[in-house]
Length: 452
Ligand SMILES: [Mn+2]
Image (cartoon, rainbow, N blue to C red; front, side, top):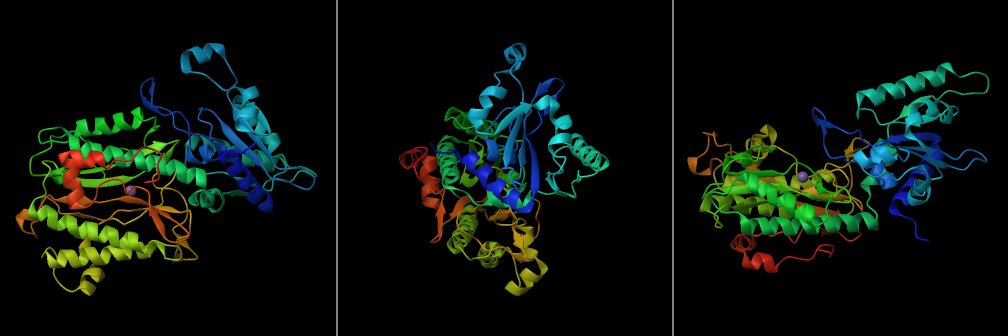
């Protein structure tokens, strides 16, 4: 019988926990209230999903390390079946079925979790817990830790430390296995297809909100769990607001539109940004700045391979952006001065990359031993340079003001270099204008699930 990737993740983590004698308590997310008695749609925490593939709320995974004769154990706490509650809130897997379905050693009722943990964790040396996901549950963990200490007598040893999942679970999640990469390819292909479709759809006078609705519609229709983060659908100067999510203004003839949006497949994220002309044709100024961003993006992608440091990817972009802004007269001085004073930050104020996975800004350390980390096969990172000319920037000629451009792809580090997961999304000026015109853009689409 083949083992699910989630069970494989659990086994791999249990091996590390056994080595260091750590018991892990990994709750899923709490249901978030939107307003009054309406909740947001539930989404499990990424750590919990990674280890279980179980999407119900009110659940917690407890992993106990192997010790002496005792084998390692996985206990899943979840909701018991309840006909009355299921009529109102939806189906529940229940304790009996979860043993086989999830493949854990044992299931217990979530309602008894905190009381139960007092016994389950009685002789554990170290307890893994991720602080910061909720004050109430953090308080419960501290109370439990105190209770274990106060209850220690004779041969019962209290836990010594609370351990952050960072060096264990987060580091595992940073390296994607074959099934995870396949999931990310599907998310990337769906997102690329959707961006391409949007380019053909946008016309002057349309509202940013309609673009957002098209993205949601396309993702959900294709079976995605939804958007991986709030879409940015920014026309004209709104593109210079880095986290613009209001998405409610009309799109104007002659403006660019910046769209930063990604679908999730089984909660694995894609993260694509494309910038295209609302009326289908770049103006001279838009074209000039777009070429700089595109050249920077391609320069950064070109350096991605095992052994290259994370910060080198940013450095490659920065050189091209500074050269381009100098050439177009938006910056003056020498490259050294510009870098020293960071004056490029008036136009490019964010970093070029972040890890990508179950979280759009995925976990995993960026620095190791005080140095920027070397890339290794299985890591996925974004490459996303931009140039943003503030609409109120009076230091530059008026014709440049309000142009905001970002181009973003998702890049898998492979043994021999890299694979661009999102390359089906049009990027060259020629391809973008063709996609805006419709026909060629549509012909270039690739089916979901196929390696892009
Ligand atoms: Mn991104």
